Length: 302
Figure (cartoon, rainbow, N blue to C red):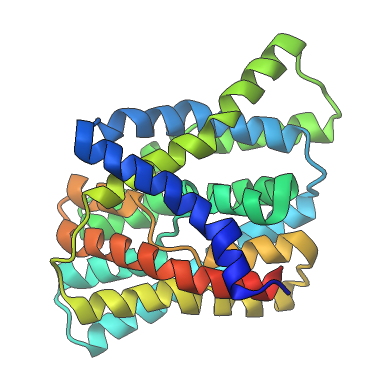
């Protein structure tokens, strides 16, 4: 078991140093985060997934366990968050933003680098599978919540179908299962692009955080952040025990279940008419609080 301060210094601080430098860059030059986000989503991350999974020792059983934990934990958080929103009397728009903050996980531009730092290449491979499950969730339930149900199921499916990450994961599993090696030029190109994924994701995170602010309702935001950072990993502990998940796969599933609110939730709220101010405040609050909560989680797991 690692000490709290050792984990915070060696694993969490590097991520926030990169994000902080990116936040300074945003204040100085105001780059367009959407352009970089698209490169990450449509090029860097799929290449990272293809490269890691094609050469991984991850079994189909472990992949299924990770997706099961991600999906079940998210469903339980949704139910708890909707109940909490009703109890504290939030209206429909704010209540939807509250649930959005509680359920969408930053398993990408925070979770992948952290898994790499904490658990090595094996952790990153497993984090990619978990991340794939959260991408589907973000583009279905996330859009529904952000738009208060005004987006059709057909459009949600179309949005999911246009994200290349699931296809890259599928191809990676096919290559892995068939023991098929990519041609050298393709393998090297994919590997090179994949190496850019983690730095680029942290840059996007820093830019997004630099534009966030504490302007929304403090108590609901703190409650949503608590559900995301504390209840999430506690649920994952129970699910991994129930499903018999062990080793690095268990560590990754619990760690990523305690990640802060996904940056994409702010994008969705802005795009589809949700309470963007509440969501943006939730992203900033949960990300800052995660310095403490994730240091505790990782110190217990590593």
